[in-house]
Image (cartoon, rainbow, N blue to C red; front, side, top):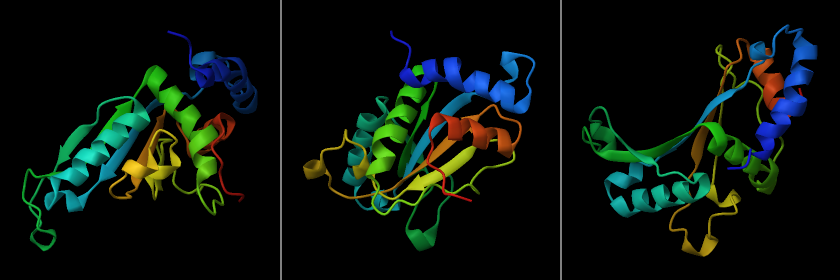
Amino acid sequence: MNTPRLLARYRKEIAPEMMKTFGYKNKMEVPSLSKVVINIGLGEAVQDIKFLESAASELAMITGQKPVITKSKKAIANFKIRRGSSIGCKVTLRRARMYEFLDRMVSVAIPRIRDFRGLSTTSFDQGGNYAFGLTEQLIFPEIDVDKVTKIHGMDIIICTTAKTKEEAYELLRHIGMPFAKK
């Protein structure tokens, strides 16, 4: 299998640039991507299971990997959710699929968002991971608009090996994440 375009760019351009910026002595110190988790939460799936099936098939088309159906851990009477009922789906991407997905998301999907002003720079946690949400799945070109039954959003968490928020921000900025101007 060919090396993903983003991975080759990381090895050739991004890692040496980060070594200069942060003064790393060894290339193994340079932060890298460890995994990307995409989660779709569908509370409406309790009433109609077809919503969950269509969301899972769309997520499989977007990521190229079969999603796991997530179950509720406890019952919530106000939302009519029983313990163990299916309420969403998620996919964890690693290695080549992760780089392919991020490359497509940064270069194709995010530019298709209407009235986009940049991603928030405050969504980093202490461990150097970045989380953000998308309001609709239609921005991905793999989705056929005519076959969509319901528009739903998704949460995307990008996990890195960075030790600080600043290292993670620089890594994702070099990858091409369009952050809002500070």
